Image (spheres, rainbow, N blue to C red):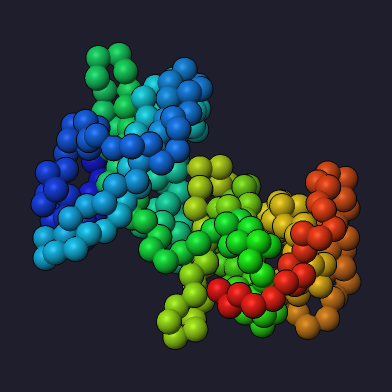
Length: 275
């Protein structure tokens, strides 16, 4: 597979002496996440600040892996680097118009018997994961409900768009959903960690999986907020028979595996924070 370089980033990479695979592979950078050692190899992530040709900096996430493979339908026997699947999903999401990461660089190279891969993406500047955002709210006070609902509306629109294209994320956790509140009050949502995404022929199949996952990992949201999100996703004001069936299906699955949450840890218990 030919090396991929985002044309917008080509001069920035060149300015930092990172125009090729070897330079990116040898770049000394602290681990943003400790390397994951499994599947017979390793995979790690670093956050790097790159200088811009005209001044200033911009951050990237540099992901490097060696002999860290998974079986793909295009590589059913020997497998291929897991970054290949992630990169393809990033391209597919973007081709469908679903907001996600912007790829900067991707390549796979061999070094003797070792198979290496690099995936570079642009940092989501100003975006905060919903997991981190909610934890901050629980500590310092939740924002007003109208702001919370506007965030939920943006996330619901993102998920609905994914499912309209037959995309099932499979790991739609709050830590993978990022939201930014812009200066004009507008709200943007992005989704990351696309490696396990799958195409499904039915929007309902996509919905059951992803809505269950999000609901199960969002027990600190009030039930009324979660129901509001559900109706926003379906674009209905009142629950239809299908909506009631879907809601009961998701609630039943969540109830069977619900994690115990302290009663005090509920959004809306405190107030005063606006973002």
